[in-house]
Each structure stands twice: as C-alpha cells, then as structure tokens.
Image (cartoon, rainbow, N blue to C red; front, side, top):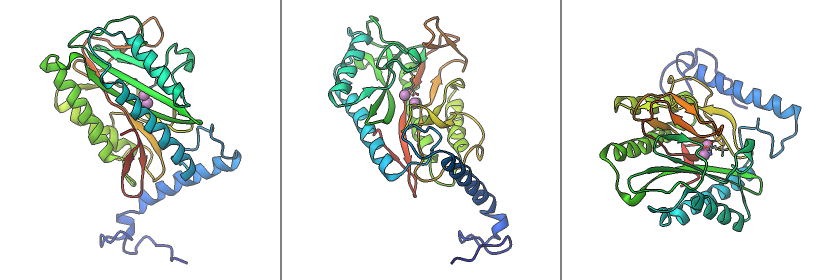
Length: 299
Ligand code: MF3
Ligand code: CO
Ligand code: CO
C-alpha cells in the first residue's frame, strides 16, 4: 500500500514544494477524468464503436497504428504523381483504389454525405475540398487529407503539396510555418499538459508571424471512430481543457490563413474557404500519448 499524500506533505515530484502548492490540483483533475471515463465505461461495455472511450487499450492502439501506417503509405504513393496537369479527381481515384487494395475503406466516402474518398483543398480552400475535374497548375498549394478505416480502426493525416515544386515566397512561407505549427503542437502533447496547451502554442506561433488560425475546425480524438472527444482547438489558453494522459489518441491539424481567420462554406455544403479569399494551409498527424510524450502514428 502507498500512503495517500496529504496536502502538506512534500510533493511526489521532488520539487521540494508542498503537495498543495505543486501537483495537487493537476492530480485531482486527472483523477476526475478517469472517474468520468470509468462511470461511462460501466454504463456500456467497451465496444470498438463507442466514441466516448478516449483512452485506448493496447489492442486498439495496435489496430490504430496499422491504419495510420497505411495513411503514410498513401502519401508515399501520391508523392510523385501530384504534378501540374493532373486533376483532384485523379488523386481521389488513386487513393480510393490503394485503400481498397490494402483491405481498408476510405472514411470520408459517404461520411455525412461527403461524395468522395479524400479531401483536396487548393489555395484559398481551408479544408473539406471535394475532388473534381479541377486541373492542378504550377504554384498551387494543395492539401490532401486521407483517413482510412482498417479493421474498424481509423488513421487520419493531411499534408501540403506545392504543385510543380515552385510557388510564391508568400505561399512557401505559409506552408512551412503551418508545418512548424503542427510540430510545436506535437511537442506540447504529453502527459500532464492540457489540450489547451497545444492550441495555445500553435496560435501564438502563427500570430507572431502575421497569420491567423482558423477557429471553425478543430483536431479531434480518433481511432475507434472518425471524430471522437476531445476536440483539439488550435487556439486558446494554456492550462485549459482536459488533461492529457497516456493512451489517448488524437489529431492535431492546424489550419493557418495569410489573412483573417473567418471561413465560409460553399453551396456544396462541404468546401470551407477563407472569407477574405486569402491562402490557407494545413498539416495533420494522428498522435498517441505515451508515458514520456507522444508517438506520431502517421509519420
Ligand atoms: N479528415 C478530416 C479531418 O481531419 C475530416 C474530413 S470529413 C469529410 O478531420 F467528410 F470531409 F471527409
Ligand atoms: Co484529416
Ligand atoms: Co482530422
């Protein structure tokens, strides 16, 4: 038996401070999170489609990892094919075929009536662009967002492509900075930090460089369903939101605009564009929280 720490004992972390002035509040919030989860788990047996289970079992993690590795392979397959002159429908076709050939299913297809197997978002499109006969031209910046369902497990990642390898210095800087936003967000994704810590650093990093962060779309828990709790905003306050604990799996997927943060949805009901027509970029990974930090499952 371990003795329960009382408020005035020295903190377990070795800081030399009293427990009440150090980790007490953080520990209480963590315990609260676990209790809420276990109550829910009592009400309903664990099932691969129960979106409320945000802490994954080792078996589920193994399945999610495989799905994420398939997403990674899709980007490798696409790498040399995305050149000026092709259409976004071709990207859809290649991705759809590759996913089926690997025993999986493209999560976007028929998801809330989304009509295609992948999202392709060009220039001022923030996200959820629908593949069509649009021809890619040199200098376009394109986001391809791939989500696979393999044996019931989801992997979700997106990346930017610079069409023809050349674009304006402005677009180049946006794409690079957005990737950095994702990376510094991932650095914050570790036990005892909060979900708010992730959004906070991302927002700061983007805004000091003159960009804005899209507010209308967030990262999300993922693995047993496409979109699970918790939402992962890419803006907000440090030390806010749920505490991060091992075996959570969620995405970080900042959308960064050169102009204002406001978005607008086109009449197709999906395509999200910048309200002011400015360029937008996005990078996304699915990450697993480990004891010491995180593992990027889609890398
Ligand atoms: N893959 C997107 C995400 O990162 C969601 C796309 S929903 C779709 O969450 F229906 F457009 F595919
Ligand atoms: Co995605
Ligand atoms: Co996502």
